[in-house]
Length: 204
Length: 157
Image 1 (cartoon, chains in turn yellow, orange):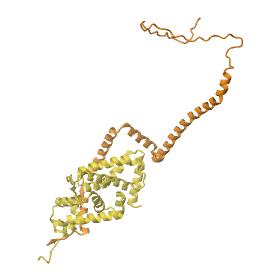
Image 2 (cartoon, rainbow over the protein chains, first blue to last red):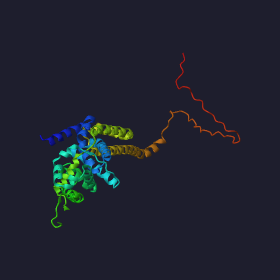
Image 3 (cartoon, rainbow over the protein chains, first blue to last red):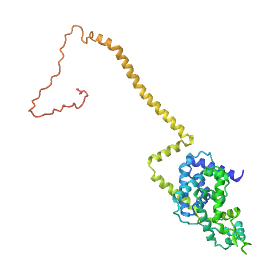
Image 4 (tube, each protein chain N blue to C red):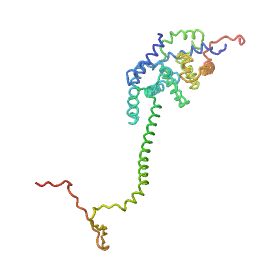
């Protein structure tokens, strides 16, 4: 049995217990899924305090409606769907009135293979202060619409497959791909300053 | 020297750096406490009828009751009871009406022949109650009937 299947079965058992009023089972679900839900909400809002409020809203909704959860989808999909929709609604209401409140970067970034490769290939990334790089990436993501941001967060940052994103957002896989394509085009333009610099033979 | 566009791979590598943004240490441990506190607060704010409905749902949850099905069954039950309530008094009224219609003629015919006195008894004239004539100039007086203390017969030894 692979890890994903084991996790799914564990969720089923915990959900069944939580539906009979076992609060310890509900707490176990919360502890298990909160880190991924936090990442989803945080990367969409770029604000730690908003993320904290939204995460509590999400778990309050899950608590109220877990009795009606019939297991037609995986608990993981269901709870991510609640988190994504709650956050999208929040972002649509919030509009442009927001401030960034970013979490600290962990020390692991300095050992991250992709980061070291980026530094080697791109002079701007090498020259940029880590905080500045983080701010620029977040600003670029925040310029996307909430729907596009959700897809980018789930696919590019969290590494979810297209099929899972489609189920969570209740859209087709084709729509997921087209949203990703559009969002990537915009981000490539907004983050072009971090592209590797090449000498131009014509200007020499 | 000129900046080119980021390739798809470079963009994705750049976006993945966001995985290193982490909440403060101990955040998830405290989250559980905050969610518990919020649940208690919500519980206190909720009206009693909502709590009652939730308890009923929790009670029936192990039976896996489909609420739409249960609701339609309840509606059918209510309509059924209402139909029975309407139908029963109508039947009684109809039967009495039938009895009256059938028997009115006979009763009227036989009423003249019915005598409630034994044979040979004298006819007692029926006295009509007389209205007391009151002097309109006299002051109004109210008479309160005396009520018996008890209807039980007194015991005599």
